[in-house]
Image (cartoon, rainbow, N blue to C red; front, side, top):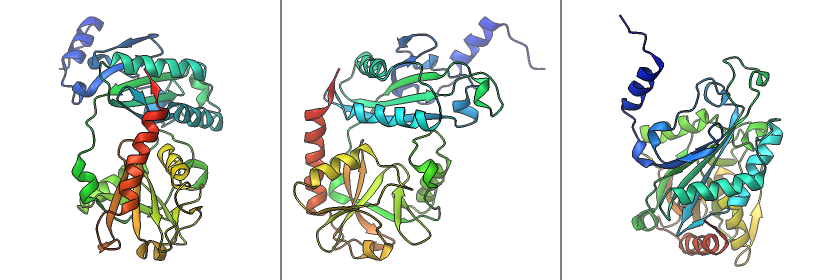
Length: 313
């Protein structure tokens, strides 16, 4: 018979239970406690927070390197824009959130890592109505991270056409915690022993990867990315568009799969890895199957840009 534990005994048992990944948690902030903690075992989010059981919340993934937080203001602005779309009132000002992110990065004790910021509807019940949740949740987690290996950029990645379609437009531009389609794409890539699944809409136009934007250098040497709509415009993609515009033609608009098959280069853009070449797509080499000159150049330019403009902590 299962024993009914007293609160102190239950908490002790919970903290003693195996906690996979706890060594990666360097520091975190929970607005219920109004403070920062560096013991990952205590990262305990209430299950009745609608973030957990309804996917009613937002998140941002932010990198920091060499003591600089990459494009912090852009990430927070996107979260606040998403909050307006969800009619979710943040429990603090954006300027306060900015200070807290810097404080958590500092408390991590490392000059490099990844940060996750979560804005949730908050705890209050297991129904679906936001009215159950009187107090929004706000959480920040700093995670240990290794720098991308150098051979990632020299060997490149393989990609394929995903069986899953892009998200609907009203969802695609909100970075919500409801990432089940992205999870399915990641599982699809594992099952096929490929690196990256890429969505395409009903007309055959490119969408995005599970956790990254995709761009191409077309046969005319133009840097091209999909138009906003059913694609989340990532912060790294926006930086890449700005940088590339100084060196080559840049165009945002539909990219049909036929154009991808003729591309000189394919690029995967994320804040963690910056710009990684995709050298195979749907079983075929992209151009000569080797990382291209734009991929190598843009990776270095993005790193320099983000270190120059990053927020010190």
